[in-house]
Image (spheres, rainbow, N blue to C red):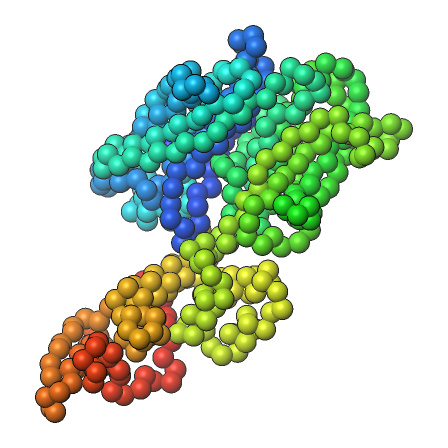
Length: 432
């Protein structure tokens, strides 16, 4: 889709209008998102509908200026092979993307260009191959994954589970904003799961439960929906997912079960049908680039005040520490209405650069040069000369506001130390 919406037929009942697909949050390495959902109702006997989603974040595309706007183009090739490597499906879809501003082309809105292909496949296990090619840069992004198609003719049966973050019903149509893939980027966004149910037995009453569990069986959250009457062979359902506790980063499993209802009582001990899918929680939507939370908190010393650090480090568990870390960066977000936190991105980008450029006897971010670089950024001018004693080397950094820092290496091994201490209130401040 371009800037509007795309109408998709899911299953055989009604149309779903896809608003837009959420891209990765700021700080992550952008990549192509893929998903495959299986529904019953194929026109070909013995096969099932397989909807393959490919979501391409704007920031991985090359845009070019065109008539005061910015344009890009791409192709998405979707192929499916069986267990012995025979190609059973192969389709290529071309798209053009036009946005109004340069910021949009760099992913400031979090939007993706979403391609959907509908295939008909027999029940079984397949290999899914997806290649996205940028029309201007010719760069390719390729992914390969296993695709399992269940037999939905054995009823009652539940289709694949789709993650949805927005639902709006208009008559017999639904507008949805799906998540593509298994990763749930935000624990604060209301999340639903959409699925279809197939039953040869009509006019029965059933209820659906959900449970998100860790590998050790611990439940992150669970619930049971209201009883519903199944008066058609195929029906569509949504369940709100409300985790009961904050999820630590990791891999979980969502399970949806169908239960019998008798006399208004749901028998949750009996499952008539079941379906599962992965539920991945990344480090967070605010700081996915952080792989070591303890280190990331220590590195806040150049931006946070001591009382702010005490609040974060005073937490008694990782989940709460993660939450306080995210809240700190939300308070420093210069554009809170956008999906990006430019201050966070700039700060940890400078730390990474400092580690590459200024490592000495310690990590680059802990050196004097690293500290100045993280707080003030790239100097406007750099001078290098011998000191008056003719032994040590001096490097002078000058910034646009005539602020000057002199670093001296008395060892000859690149261990540059500040000749004068930094101002006591020197802290990183994001500037556009």
